[in-house]
Length: 392
Ligand SMILES: Nc1ncnc2c1ncn2[C@@H]1O[C@H](COP(=O)(O)OP(=O)(O)O)[C@@H](O)[C@H]1O
Ligand SMILES: [Mg+2]
View 1 (cartoon, rainbow, N blue to C red):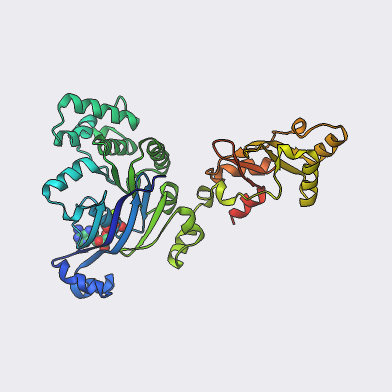
View 2: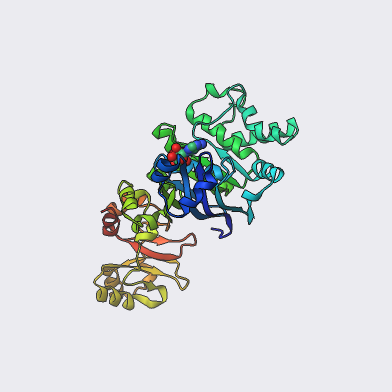
């Protein structure tokens, strides 16, 4: 993953009410959201939030309803004007943009997908997708061509001339997504885009988003109140509560070291099989044999470590096979070589495989699972008990 910082938010605060600037000082002095409301009638939407989003990552903001997620994401395209703080996009503080710069920014760099789709019901599907291009005065032929292409990307070929109300919820949100993609923005802001969909459709859309992202590599800021969705989609997740970010980390980090009790309570509900990956539970085997080591070394290593099989690699650590102790002893007697008795009836997996997919393999396999990278380089092994104990 690229390490370029695409978005950098610094000490961002948003207060709703008549004179937010006047209330800001009290907030900075530590007045709570509750007190602010009671004493000043203002609502503290977000409170001194800072974070960075890397180019090409899916950054998820997760929190309960009312925690300030929408307020925050709407600051990122200045639908909400921050009360205080800075938002750098590609190094430029967008809060300081003039009208013209802001228009450019909204038309070209950023696009938003809304929870309730926000489609124009009187426009056809394709006319919805063309909207942003129309605003930019792209000629009709050109925008039609772009819109058709984008609709195909989201699987809506053939639906161009229907109206939104003729489409299911899932399909309407595909239109919402296509409309956002039409301007080819660097940054996609998605405010609970799947929350209004049925669970099945929702899961389908989540997978498609991941597929699409693998190809398009946008910078995505995705909001959800569903912790499983957050951990499934997010490269990193920010956990929000009462307008503050309580913790930022990869799903695995938050899962294994929750910052406080509040977060801990959240991650309790998580389905671990969808977060923990092979690389999190694999380990270096007690012994690993190189082809040049030969049969005697293999036999000794297995004996010494009390194991009945061992993986064999070449000089570049690429996985060649596995030998068992029985085969090895027999081969020594029969003057065979290591290569003659290599077995291949074990399972391999990549480091990113979720244990959800490892479980069925782990329970049926006789030998440890070998974890290899895309070049078949040996990374580690996984035994059944590590898969099972990861679930506790
Ligand atoms: N336009 C607004 N005017 C006043 N208060 C608002 C406005 N928008 C949001 N809020 C308040 O800000 C807080 C955060 O709301 P919101 O960002 O919508 O939360 P979430 O998206 O996490 O459900 C809530 O207390 C909400 O009532
Ligand atoms: Mg919201």
